[in-house]
Length: 112
Length: 110
Image (cartoon, rainbow over all chains, first blue to last red):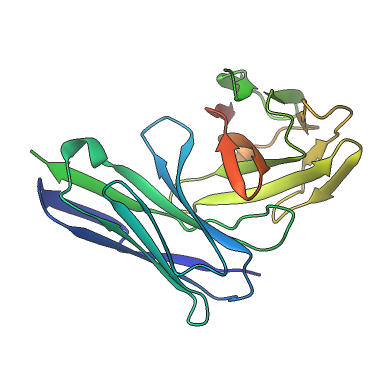
């Protein structure tokens, strides 16, 4: 069974800082890995999807990297803004049936 | 553009009652899933479906039933609600590895 760990569990930073959120997983036989954002009381929004053959993906101020062999992924957020405050979830995908296993998330607070 | 629609948004049940959580998607996705989210535990997969007529169990299937008679709909049934089923339930559909989530159903079982 895939076990997913996200560190840190919570993070509070002043606006403008560059951030790194960490995700580790125990089974490296993944098909892909997805990073999500969840706002309080809301559903999940997909941020980035990295295929197992890729090393990284970028979208705006977000960059996600994947080291499948070591079971690690990082989400880099550049020049953080208060609007980035949310919980960020990492989810490695196990097979072609789009099954994902989720970490418990990193709760980010960006202070103005 | 509706995406994934879940109803109801909130529900309170008494122990032993049954109910169905509805999920519908309009993106013609083959894959659909149900998750529950509990504080500090992330999302756990309850059941999933790879197409109409095909369903399978996830990590925590006990106490829940599903069916998939159409591509669009994937209802989750609680047969006899228990306090341990108090949670937030999310439905998702996916294609090409990208998952799209509904807004969730917050369920309390007293």
